[in-house]
Length: 158
Image (tube, rainbow, N blue to C red; front, top):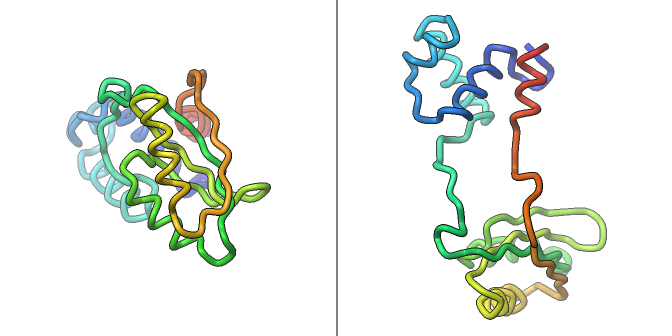
């Protein structure tokens, strides 16, 4: 096993499901040249270990009407991270929140339908009790989308 807790077969299975998430266990087994039970056991272990967290569809937010993505760095009052994160989770347009080091305390990815809508979302974020200061940047493009493929390929080669 690789130091990551997955081995080459796990990585090849995850790459296969990354490329074709609707494949069944039997077809995965056929393509990988292993028994169906092996694939099922690997999937069960990967899910139990928290490596594989589910099979959600990938959605283009633009197609849902959310063509604007922005990132905000939030400075929050000491000791209020959990409370602020819970309040941010209640804002539908907040897609991700990461606790960070450096100038800010939380890094937030949010979406909006327009600049006016982004102002509304920012106003909601700023209105969260415990948020002291924000700095927001609008994403113009996404030259590198979120990805894990290169990491899986490295493990599959090892």
